[in-house]
Image (tube, rainbow, N blue to C red; front, side):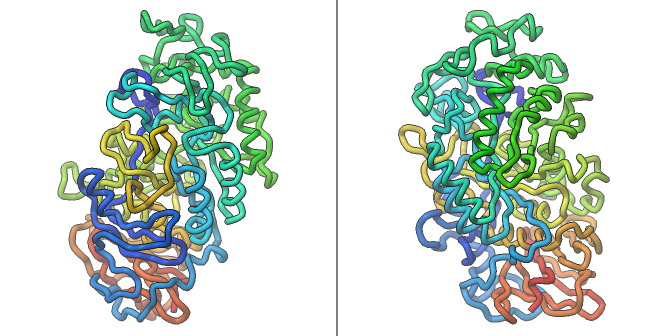
Length: 573
């Protein structure tokens, strides 16, 4: 949970989330479709315009597109000259088997376990994704009435961030479905990273999705009031009178004591300095590791603190592959000293809030005020003040930031090209965010009358950025680029930029509102290359535009508006 300070009712975990988009192509396995129309307003428009496919049925196309489907006549500006004939079927997804690196995460926020299972098999594995991040799997509060956090949404997205029990009975499915999902994803070559909520329990309610009864400081078989921080012994902030609370909520997010010992937006704060609490939390995480989970996104890690995180981590088993679990800690920016992200590097990787913020600043429409300028990204990464690359889980948006306007989101027409930049640049470990469309900040995922999340349908209510071809194909591009350095940078001083990754791969990104034609150095050997943003190599042909690189490594390329062109060694025809 992000420490947002304006959560309604003081009971809502400070997480928000949005889908992605602004236009991108969806894809199922090896078939591909055109880029979806820009989404500028409303969930209804999003559901109608985002071009994607249903998760379970056979792939179909629909909606407006600024990029044509493979196999149709091209209506986009020609890229680098000739366009080879192609068919709708793809010869290879993205050459994942020949990757030099395989670290991209697909963050399938609050997808149910059946849908994650299918996505791993048909999309993530074939396209070279290395891992999938899934929602908190533990039992959680099930709201029975409006109010106390949301007056309009009965089952908001943040229910799953209020744990009740560590049994795996959640909105996403039961324990058997979870275990099956993990096993199937691993079989597809995709690791599973679980969102672990271990800082707190609930702030409201008395019944869970698993049917467990509880009160705020009493959880049968788990915790009693002594297992939670209290005021004034631990927290200097007194509890709100009349609520029956034993602890106050954080009032000063720059106070070390308050951040660690007071309640985050009214959620009962676990006494993680207690060996009993540490053992209980580690037992839950070790159960997940035993099922084949490879790591954790640690929710609200900032509020647990370094000492307690170290103690919990020391109790964790190795993964079934014999490695230490991957840990990505949620530590928001803005606080000083030992509660800043830089102070948690010894405990694990950090969520790249700083990365997402700088990306938003660069990619915001240059017609708005203040305007963006992707040419500024010539100086980026650690050089621009970000966390060390090997300690950052980079993202363009997540479920917190999409709703609080601190980053881009799927409603921005720059969201897809920004995601493509993230995959291409090579900073951090990239996480591609796929979620659901929303109107209000409390909206939860599509669900049935009981709050159970229904199967993902990328044509209706869900925004499946992991399938957009401009994104999915760049996963293979990213994997092949590996650790090659950014080189041959070129920009127009505004919103068109191009660069290579050594001599392995090259991309041009146009964040402007009109197509641009440029002649630039690609760093690649002479030859004809298939543009993997708009097509796929099929033997010695390409289903989309072809870029011709001359004898000196230069190419003349036309990049459509709000779009990219990308080539690499394995797309040579």
